[in-house]
Image (cartoon, rainbow, N blue to C red):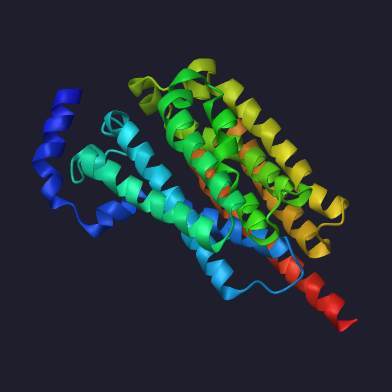
Length: 307
């Protein structure tokens, strides 16, 4: 489909937009995982109780800014999305939401999110969210994605920041603990996304996106995934080594990491369907890893209070 055809499709069908279409623009499942990581960052930043209003305003602000960046990604990638099976039904690609409506929606929720963070959280957290918005919505979506097979490695930094947002919301400063949480997600992102890229290699090649399997082949990509997975397990042990977390988290990290390595080996060995299964496991892995961090923190706090 040409750009002109896409624009005509968008103009003709935009009136069919519903609230579900606008919600889909925000990539709610991705944002939900981001909010989990941000919430864990908040709790790990302090041994004190977090006020309900700070928890609410922080997550609401982060969700709105992240949803705004996701909407920009939909707008920029509309021509790509319509030609890929995984994304062909997205609202802007299908014309259920026009580009102009998407831009207005992104601007409104983005400004609302930034305002909430500035007024009810702190300016540092707001500026960090703005930096992530620019990084993902503009730098990655408009340039990096199309420029280099290392797109997801470089761009992964922008998506790895949510736990730092939570951390700074509580402390109003950038500390090593918050950066370590960022490092975990930053290391997790390449094997997570390259597994999907392997499963969708032909589609990425069709639309001219230089994902690693397209530019360097499947075998090289599998080596990278395996290497990053081992690196990830090593990084996830650091919180225990430095005394930031305890044995509950360590056990969680090692069990989950063993599972991730197992899937990476299956993928490397060419097991049928291993790419998409590795991708799905990686989502489960990150969710459970951060829940393990939260459970461990709660256990340590309760144990300290009981002594």
